[in-house]
Length: 192
Picture 1: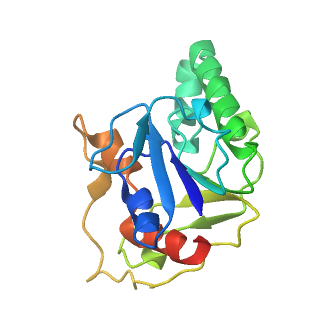
Picture 2 (picture 1 turned 60 degrees about the vertical axis):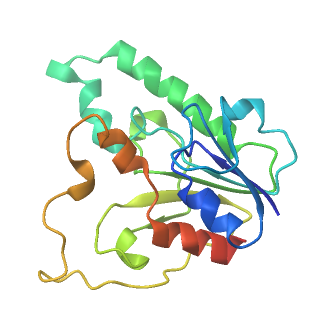
């Protein structure tokens, strides 16, 4: 299968599908973190290149419900933030409506102000072998829901203290954007 992994520089999802024998390329405006097939540039430049499956991870900074508080600082609508959110929605919709037979677009729970389509399902890392909570929504086109592969009981003794992937610093956004290996492996196994 010919697969595009859009907006991914970590190579995690790309490499999970490569291990299963697929023709896969990741694409991002950033260079890849690990060697492998990667197009550095705008995914819209290659979106019409005859892909069978696309898994997309568009930026969520302006669409996420977590960022909604920045829309109304001091009770006044931030027009610049709203405009950036509308541009992010346009990009999101270009991915979801791409001429590719099978599509998965993932993002956190979106802010209602942008009126994104309803997501198909949400998943959690603890359903795929990681003792963490980080709700991720999946919008699916011609793909079955992703099934949990390894439930991890999140008792007090198995929880990782703190919000480990949300630490500050220059790599904060990169750390949060990286797909958990168990989720990437499940995608490759179930959709490949």
